[in-house]
Length: 103
Picture (cartoon, rainbow, N blue to C red):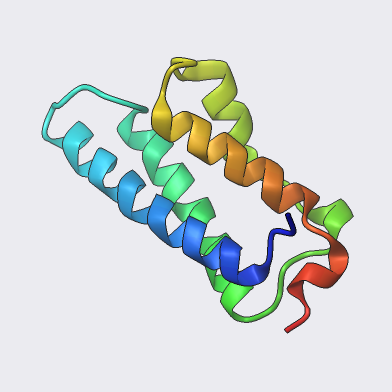
């Protein structure tokens, strides 16, 4: 199934909400996925992806890279639901067909 810009916008929007929730919990001292710094970094990168998608300015396939994917894989618990969703998004985003982002 093709991953479209609309799919990207929807998934990133949902993940931003979840990352912000996790960030709030970390700031309150509630344990969970990621540190405050990690979640802030992930949130910034997700917001950049979302902004670019809405403006139809997604980089060419060979220029797309999601830095948070490595952080999640290397430092988070493999059983993390949020981590799996972030990794899946990164994979789909980096592999989107070039014509998927022409609106």
